[in-house]
Length: 523
Image (cartoon, rainbow, N blue to C red; front, top):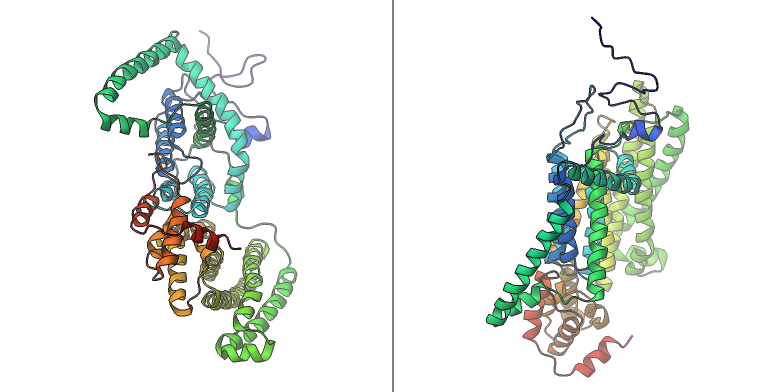
């Protein structure tokens, strides 16, 4: 009676039931799922790509972006939940990491960020939300908890798309190998029959009812070479992105060592001396700033020979840069400063705590300067956005002070990003273009001066606030210009702010369009 052994045969690399040990650096870090994509994954990605091709309006914010976000999220959920049974059970199980509660938060944040285009018409605001959605999306699919892990997800995206494409092709091959030799022919036949039935009955319904014909024309775009190219482009890009995301979820790279918050340590004097000198410099600046903050306008005019607004404008941007660089210095010190001995921990808390506290005063000074500058010259998009960023810097510094209690704070990067995402969503809810318009309307009542060229360049979000302008000529002029710059929307580009703006503009017709355009284009 013979006994079977698990020894590999000649030329065999390992056991038949695998998984076999990877021999390359990429293989050890990122071995891949080890099996083809499931049928549900292939169909879900294809369906979401078709939805995106038919829904996304590339030239504006609109409902189609929200629909695409929902379709993409559903596709990734299906790709994760439904798995392919292994033909040969593996002897060693990989921990695929189902994730934690924060993945739900990041995924929801991604959908909400893309949904802002349904309610806000400002292109610059939606662009910020779209870029932030790529960050929250990366956080939703990555297993890492540090900024380095998130950056690695971005860098691996092209490789994930390439390997994911091969993974999807193997899934399609597997679908054909499961008794589906005639699958392509049946799919084509089903598609042809569906199109024929919709064309025949749809044509009859269109000719039978004018209301249905209008709805059909609004829902189905005019097919042209440009439309076909747009469909192919949007669908292709969406398929690539979803394939990369699904592959990263199915086979995340090993980034555990990137999450370590401590690096190679330096000598105590090597970090304490330069940072202590930096603290003294910050302290000297803060003492002067306190004099400026509480000394009033006369102190600035007598000391510097400047108006208070000029003083605010001249220093705000420098203080913003100082705040950002201080956060970098704090992160580097927390990573490389030793903390094994009690004296090291006390020194770290004192120096970094003092630096963070002094920087908070600088943040307050910068925000005070911006407030004075805004009171003098009015609110603009850039001033509002940078002031929000400076306030976020201040919040991160408070988190740094809290983290200093225990020194180690692996939660800090993600919580800081979450605070920034919530701040951006809060800004979207507050309607920044509307706030800017409201600020200028109030200033006009006080100064009888108004910047027509700038206000006419605002989005339809500003229309309700501009409708409150008491000067009828200026009000009608601004509403007319914004209305003419607001395109008509199909269902893909439907937007609540633009719809509301059209209703308001219709109530204030312009009697002198020539004079209006001369005023708007006078600069």
